[in-house]
Length: 391
Image (cartoon, rainbow, N blue to C red):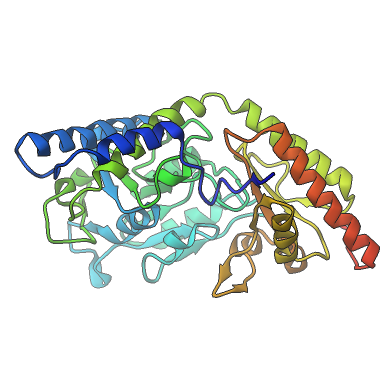
């Protein structure tokens, strides 16, 4: 038996999505062509545009399809420029991002300013206010709706209100939140949002940037990163991935339904955490008492490094991820946990367990069995596990 508990990395593609994509791939047509084949391809793209917009309460005409979530984040942070005066000496206004953003935000624009988070992982609004106040020109603020490592939900409405008081725009990475909580881009006050198809059961390599109404009228313009064609209303050149976009649309329709009822997934997550802590009294569930995604747990087992846990679980047929990022085969400390002030010794022992709609009680049982076996094996070997309080 194999168990997949790494939905935050990528969700298994849904059968309905595969069916839609298969049908579209049997067709021929470039969405930019005016003949009947092209018009049919265009109809798939525009239908998906409506479905993706509906997932977050946006307008279809404001959706720009990209080659993934990373490209969408880069398009937001690099592509938005000031029309009024060319963005000053740097060619763009100030960009302020939270300390726990995904690398595709943190590394997208040069010289970003970092807004700190508190011990709960939520942005420090007073610090953000100070950063916004010191800038002469309205800034672009980027804060993700839900963290990919820990699942923490940010107070997006409060952040939007603060940003707008300073004349700034708010970009929010909705990639992990979509399909797991209900989202209303307009109601939250978000000006620009990003999505990724493969996090919601769609294909990899397809994403979207969604703009709110009025951005272009507020002295901002979206400059394309990929040039050489008029596709996506001039915002992203290149022949559209029609089958992938159609799959994205199908996944978005299903995700909109799933987001309305996440109680079952949350119960499984809570059961997993309770049983994990029962198996090892010194286990730590990071941010357990903070508002989080219903599917995400970040669990540390002091004294046993994340890679040891991941390998042990993998050998037992259970797939999870590390709470820290891997680069070139080397495990680096998690910038998210570091920003939250989590002790480095605990952070290096943190794993991420992320559930989805197909997760079952049997999957949780398998994880607990494998994880408990690992705990007992470590204890038997006499390795120190420490005595930590739950965070």
